[in-house]
Each structure stands twice: as C-alpha cells, then as structure tokens.
Image 1 (spheres, rainbow, N blue to C red):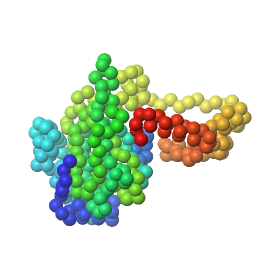
Image 2: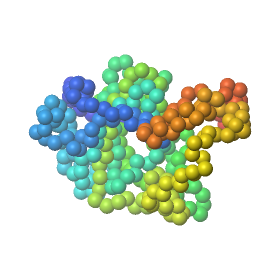
Image 3: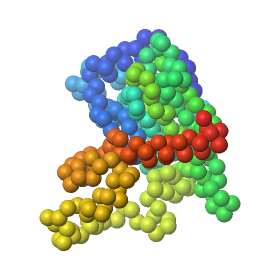
Image 4: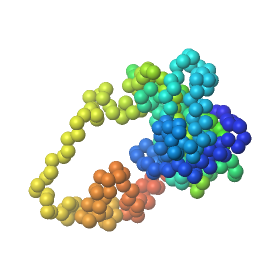
Length: 303
C-alpha cells in the first residue's frame, strides 16, 4: 500500500477530468456489479478525448513508463524487465450495492494488479461505508492436490483512501481478493489496472477462470453452443401445468408463475444475461430460510 501516491492537487485534477469527460457503463455479472469507463489503454495521445484529460494522460504515461515499471518490479521482488509496456486500466465506480466477489485476477499474462483510489478525501471512509478491498488466505484444497481455495474470511481488509495505491502480485489460485459491497451513497471511485508479462503465469490451470471452465475434468465449457431442441408439444400450451403452479406456489410468489411473467423474465435474461426478482419467495419460507441462515452464522461466530 502506497499512501500519498501523487503530489497534492494532481489526482484532484484527474478526478475532475473523469467526472466531466468520461462516460461509464453499468456492468453486472455473477462476479461483479459496477460502473466502468472505457479502456484507458485505448485512449490515444492527441485524440479529442485525451486532449480533455491531460492529467489522466500524464498519469497513464508515468505509471507505465520504464522507470516506474522498474520501481514496481523492485517493490514486488520481480526480476528487472519482467513487466511489459502493455497498458491495461480503466476508471471504475462502485456505487451503493456494487461489489466484486472473490477471485484471483488471473486472465492472460497479468502479473501485478493495482488500484489507485479517487474516493473523496473528506469525509474519510468508515467501516459502515463498506467498499473495502478484502484479501484472502490461499488454503490447500486437500492433501493430494496442490490447488488452493480462499479462506472463508479475509485476512486483511483495506478501506479506500484518496491518493493511495494498493497493489499485489497476481498468482493463479493464490491472489484471492474481493471488494466488499458498498453500503453508503458515496461513490467508490478508482483507477484499476494491471501490469503484464510476456508469458502466461506458472500453474495457470489453478486460476479461478480456468477452474470455472473445468476443462481439466472433462467438462468442456468452451465448445460449440448447442441450443436446446424446441419442444413442439409444448407450443401453444401453458408454460407450467396446474399442478406445477400449485406445488411451486407454496414457495414462490405466484406473481412469477404466470405465463406473462415467465415470458418477460426469459426475455430480460436473454437480453441482459441477468435478472433480479424482488420478493421471490413467499413470506413464510423467506422467514424460515432467513432464521435458519442466521442461526448457522451465529453458531459459526460469523455475526
């Protein structure tokens, strides 16, 4: 962690440039929920947008310069010349409810991950605001395999602080981290990026992404997509039978069991790859499940 990363007034200028000129796009997957700007690596010197953000261009040039890459190599114990000049960074905004679930950041040839915090200097972020960077211990999955899994709780957490830079070495199945959900109405602003190497990391098969693909276990998730065959017998009929609705209605809000709702939900999922259904369970089962989870958390001293 580096505090007082830039000279006074410099990051304030970058923050203002981003607010005035950078457009962000909402992104949500199973892993994260956030707002992200364009890839700053594609922001070319001399372009109309780059001319509006001179301080940001200076920062990008500085942190990817040979001199600063050498400094990062010394900090992280890497051999000189390990890091390439590839620019890979973007401005991120985690608003209320945004988060990033636990993963190891291994994609391609990433070697060092960094975050430059642009959150407002005053007031300081508090525990109640959320948005902490959370770092996890890598625990061996079992005695037979060298692969690791993240611990249940983070071993270190870092609150965002203006003009500070957090960084860590990216290692397959080791560099587990997450961003805690933001609870407050203030945006958690940052520049997130990576330094790359020429070669893929050692033991890349242990990376989070590779394990999700499960190619090593014969589950090819990268193959040709085969759509489900259309069931002609169901065409023109109710999507759920009367018995289906009666059974599911004991647990699921009946609003979501109508043909109109099912079609609308399917359409939204196909367009956006995600769907959020509020009050999905009936109150009786929602209360039972919440009570059971709370009891187990208390037994495990998880609060």
